[in-house]
Length: 280
Image (cartoon, rainbow, N blue to C red; front, side, top):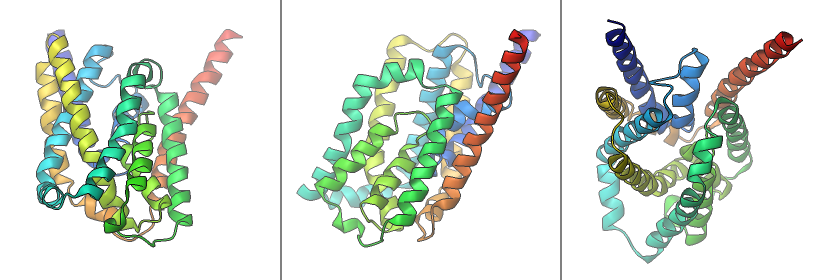
């Protein structure tokens, strides 16, 4: 009976996290950061306290979201492929180089040491502040067609920085594009174009590794439900893309990030103070 209740609770958490993952992926607020931080704020370990299962579940969520994104953006992907030329190919190639190199070199240390509430909170707050600063100070002089290889490189550097938990790939690339003086709608479109290959490639690689390691025993239902929920929530949240593309300030997203990170910092500070009181 207890095992059945535990399994039901795991499925419920998998469903909730999958439903949250879709909209969080489409906005510059860090989907991975939310998957780790929100359960912790509610006193939960998410789907499990087992690191291997948590890693497998994150792969499942990204797989569901990536599949939905390809479906939602199929017309845009088709247009990009049919209009591919040397310049646009160079933009995409240079945007891939930094995150690929950084991912292979730093993925394991980052997973071991940085994917915790304190570092996620720092990533949310710092990334939000830089996003607001870049959006407020940068002129809107350039359009999507103006993207050059140098822009691809800096967007790639931004994607490499997004390996730090809580930074957000969408948020980092939007920040870089605005600093490169792209108008907000064009910055969002450019962000998607350079992010999709990274999301697809990273998801495929992680699925391959998961297949080689094997799915943790008894976890298949939670993984499947989480992936399905992420797929469905991404499809349902597709109108959010237009919300970011509108030529309006990105400050509300930055403010939300800072607020969520600050809640986590406050919780950590209270826990630290309680620990010091117990030691005394």
